[in-house]
Image (cartoon, rainbow, N blue to C red; front, side, top):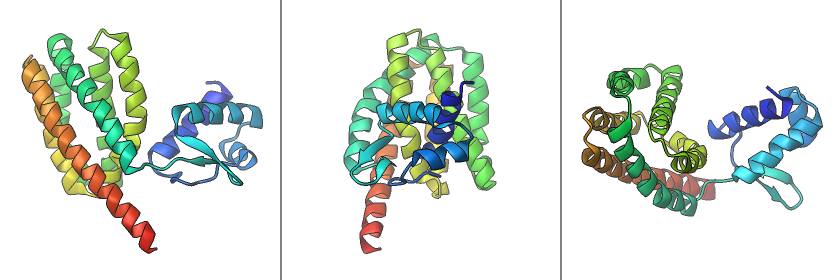
Length: 220
């Protein structure tokens, strides 16, 4: 792995999981030393993160981690609904039912994972990422896959809004299991409908969580 790729992946992971919170200043010298690369590859990594929309310049502060606003969430879900519903339809038609059957078995154990603490919650998010990849691999549509990958880059941050709400995580796991079972059954209409319901519930929770966070920050 090139030094710039190492720096990019390290910073990306920390932005997505919330270690680098919105507003965090990413000073070149400090970040290069912390990650263990020189400033040139660090600049390349920062340039890519800026293209991704995950960091932005702020006058007098340099580059900072972007925030997630209510408008951002609404716009992402407006794009997410048609893309993921179509992806679910195609996965039901083209996907490897054995792979999705294995994922279904894993999602049936999701509640136990979520109840097992922070490591289990991390494993649950990794399971969602496995599902995303399985769906992408089944599409045979490079354009749709590219669009989904860009979308998921930002959605990964939004998913973490429910990290501390185990009830929502468990409900989301049940909703997702219905999607996977529909894919296994080759039921494209049900897969799309279940995706629509899941995204409706996810959007509602994400908006509530974001509005609550904004209100709390105003009080502080």
